[in-house]
Length: 201
Image 1 (tube, rainbow, N blue to C red):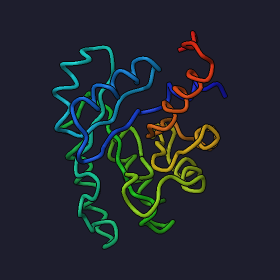
Image 2: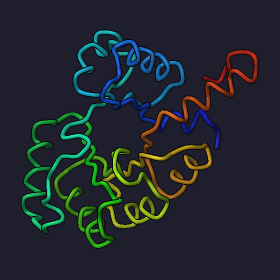
Image 3: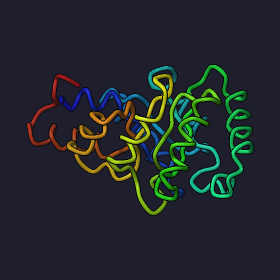
Image 4: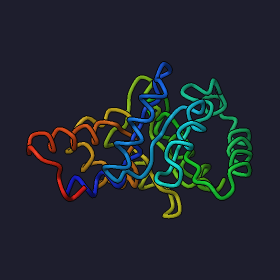
């Protein structure tokens, strides 16, 4: 798979708690240059980023991140989980909603149940991981989420995507979107090695 095709599926991400406005602007510049799907940034930087990029780039942000501090799934409170997702869906009509389920903390049964719940509540994506917990996306989890989600629910893999092979594997297993900053860095390294900007970007 061409790196350009992978980049178009990437949410170029910077969610470090101490990131600066200058870093966010650099992230936006990179995402625009390499035609990423969006940048994923902390809520406090959204207004500044929007002023900076205007309509040149899609902005993605997070809520209740990274921990959420909700025990509803582990306690089996499925109605509460559904009500919470529906409330966010109602508040984000017209926008893309991605629900992070933190696969590394869940049993297979809980993951399967969440595929149905997230889909039934009208979200657009189910996402494997925050990248801030015990583990990131795995090939097994991406495959599981794709197999148990309807076509209307897309899958996002995030956390631990360290190589182009990782990215290709996740896409082949059914990931529609990747949450990563590494793919852009790899594109920049390729460009540097070539000695000149790559026209395909």
